Length: 334
View (spheres, helix red, strand yellow):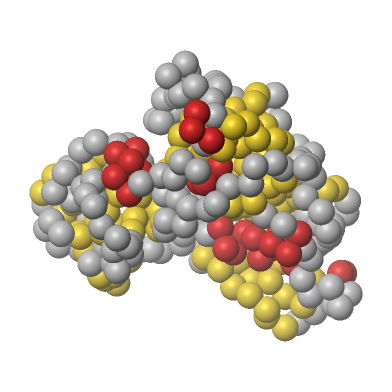
């Protein structure tokens, strides 16, 4: 079976800042240092871990970086964590933590199945002939719906991904996605009365707290909506009503532009305000939890969003492309 090589994968990363990117090279195993992906158009590498420090250079979106160490500084407030890289310091908010776990793809997929991207970046296409039309880049921890497979040249397995929001089928290398069985997303804490579960979303501190009656069972930092009529997160008492493992958010354009506002495969979405489509969900386009940054939703680290997806009701014993609906766990936003 045609497997992705390290050289081939790293060539997929955007060009730029070669001294800081992981250069294509022959190595037998992954670097021991953590990896990060530049998640925005450009990031500044600064002389010191301080927003006011001089910028030494800028690195473009989708560059992959080796992180030397983590530095907790004094600013910016909410998320003062910085990353030291070879040439200086980068604020962590614009760097997605990524890993590289290519899979042995399945030759067939008998039913529609959610799948998680398991490499830092992969590419989707209109067909299994990549020269024809490039579509979206897909990112680590995003979740997509696999509806089938096709076998290409030299036995390469391609997964067919269905984008329900655009009614679009696209193709991605099977080795770049990990199929998710029910054990990955099935309900947890089912022995607890569902009406004793509730979530407190505290905007001022950007902190979510999950309770079972009066006992705290999980806390997480998040990014809520930015100030503004159309972007502020609504406050009040709500209930989780619809849960979907993966959703395409954004402007709804079919494009290959990596800078377009298109977010295919937003993972572990728990809608609690239906009129505006406000949800608790995982995030791969930034890592700035603790600071306001969204268009109204509660942005969470993917692992926190998955936990909430599993813990809240309505329960999701199977992943449905249209989601699971019903009056579920109470969410208080204040």
